[in-house]
Image (cartoon, rainbow over all chains, first blue to last red):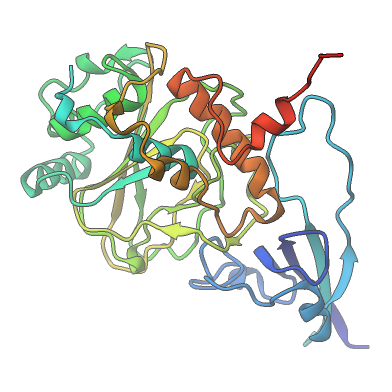
Length: 101
Length: 267
């Protein structure tokens, strides 16, 4: 039975629309060896890339990524209507890949 | 007291309000850069007591001369006034061959003030991309987070690596998101950071002769590519901050606040 492992891609969009453009992104690769967790120039590192890997969530879905979490949307808590903080439109996607045991 | 000729102007202040930082390339003379580099190599810059007057810090050290340059004093005066306090400093290093990027963070904790501290980042030697330098995210200074809350994020459209020549200085609002970058060279990479606190109300401390220049409004409207749907909320925060800095409670930009402050009672 081949072993499969998870890769995660986190895309942050301009709006909640899954077709909206990507403004930030992160990658976490469970298929890599421990000593490859961060490699120089790797996109899975701060500053490791200048362009997003996909133009939108839908673009990533067309390449085989499965959306596993949507951002929940809540009205602003009274008094926080004009506060900014974290990126709001965060989509988590996964791919399962076979690795050599 | 800083020489008025070295104070920031209103357009620069608007840039600080919109983007959270200002950049001054090759501001510090080479002779001082070399002297400060030597002090950092020798770990010869002592940590001082938080809350001490900046004027009493490092009277004889080269790094003290950097922050007494008229150009630097003008920046300090414009942002935090004539007699700021030393908060802390750090000689940040990334060792040769260190291939990991630091996680994104902001310094200190959630800070809800309109009053603000500044942080200088001073690059005493040339910093090409393969050496780092510090990665900053323009327009992140209003985001309320606590230190490494943002460590999950890796890359943003619009992030800016500090690639610069020796003597370059940037000055940041305390809320700016940033992180160190890998150093793929065979030399230690330095970045000298200094945080200062104001002791006076931060009200029109800069050269305001150009306060009515239409370019100010244009700069305050500059969008960051990563803001997305929150661009307008960011504009509201800038308007609030400009009101605080100028003392003009009626200031508005593109009618964003006038509209939502309009609550007529006339029957």
